[in-house]
Length: 327
View 1: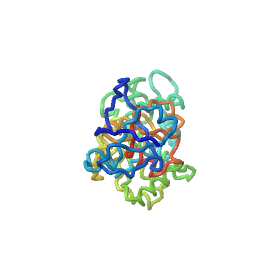
View 2 (view 1 turned 60 degrees about the vertical axis):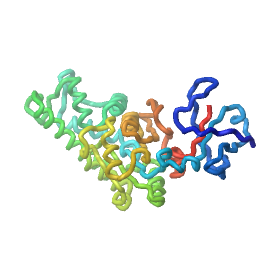
View 3 (view 1 turned 120 degrees about the vertical axis):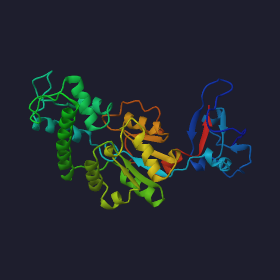
View 4 (view 1 turned 180 degrees about the vertical axis):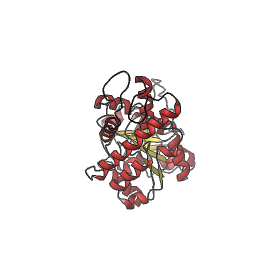
């Protein structure tokens, strides 16, 4: 096992002096690194493997950083999105919207047919605009405000436009709840396990969703169970904030209510909109992607998973701790 010198450097903004290129963070499991060093030590023992022999390595043990807590991020709160993370729900939302459009005979002036959002279009729409009402407002602004059974004529002012959208959204929400109440929808893999591990370890738990509060409450009670839902340390929905994702408002408010620093929060999201909101709030974020978000650009995520089925609390804690930097 070789021993490399370790100058007194921070973990951020390393540049390889020989190649002037950014270094690559690599997280090692504890058994792979000798961590029994004094905090004042200037060297660290690394495994003698082929990869590390070929690399220039700058390493800092977390014990050497403990003197200054500002250099470390301890996981204090796990924050979950709802739609796409706790349940794969976008197809349910789409079907509920289409049912609402049919019920109110919603037709835009660009077409004599009922408004129908097909799967390909809705995947694009929901990955660009957060929240149901903003989605409809964008769509009607683009395609013309529709005729319907809600108003005698298409809306001509802001008040009528808001009434149209509110009415459709309320009906859609009730349809969505009906589908959830059927009991056919199950939580995505690993979510309940990760919540339970967090709760047992004293990590605070929150859910932040852009969806309507009543529909999110129903989802959480049905999928988490009443006990887990009531044990959440914070729960925020789209109704609770002025600006929706990708604005960071909802995550900043969550940190405030939880009483924790944003650097000690880790967010689990499924889409680039949610990722932008989390990163904009200064929080680390991991992605649990769905079939409709898998091709998005998640470059700023800490990690990317197809689901949380094989992810445990210690795995997400490691994303904020114990980093070895290699170039």
